Image (cartoon, rainbow, N blue to C red; front, side, top):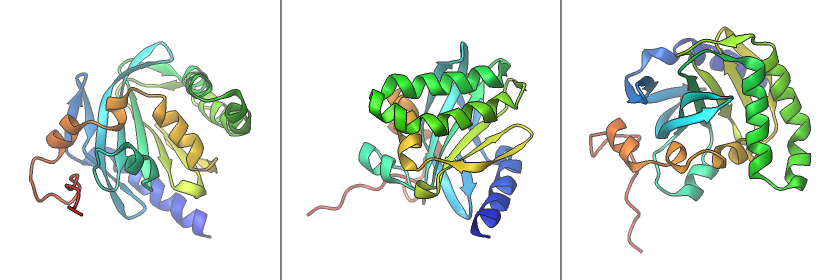
Length: 202
């Protein structure tokens, strides 16, 4: 029942992805915030990457902006968005995500992830083409796993735990995960709720 309610909330948030204010990443509009099952997520980093032979805008969202890599990786929920600048085949994108994870982890870790990565590839294979400017979302809920959303609807069956999502995130350029410049552009107000807070003095 809990997973059904979460899925419904995810589907609603996916439908309203384009309703938020946006910043430009390589000329592509990328939303500044994203609701995740009632928790507002804020863009923490963004940049242009090459995946599946195509340039894409990529961005990571977390509940509270941080410049601490460890805090970013332990945050939950969090979301990775990929927005192709040209149309890309779903199967090609699935293969590229698999290859990216494989390149960034040990052989033993990849073997652990392989069953879930096979499901990721199957999910993307079911999507013939992802049009330019459309959003692919990978949303992690920690131990509950990662939900993948593509243009046209929600792909069910949460995959893996937090480790698979984090391994993928770490394989991306650092600015996609953690960029003070993006955070400043996203939240110019010093008292904004999503902004990184200075560390307290001990």
